[in-house]
Image (cartoon, rainbow, N blue to C red; front, side, top):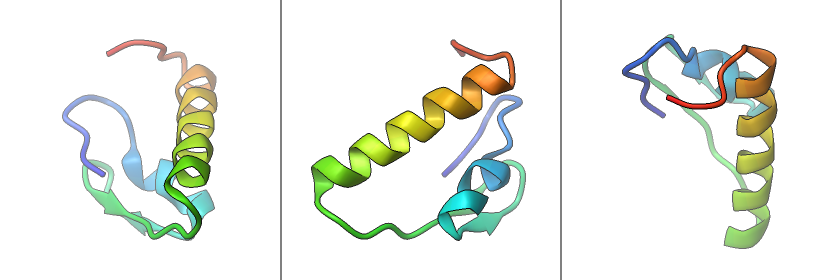
Length: 56
């Protein structure tokens, strides 16, 4: 994950067992593409909404 804005991607990756730095982080997920996509998009919407961001 990479961030060029104010989004802390390490904090986003942490619940998935990932981590890194504020502007660059990583994580590994298992499951089908559809399952992983659904989990990540749901988490991203919740994370961005909780942090007062809905758009870049």
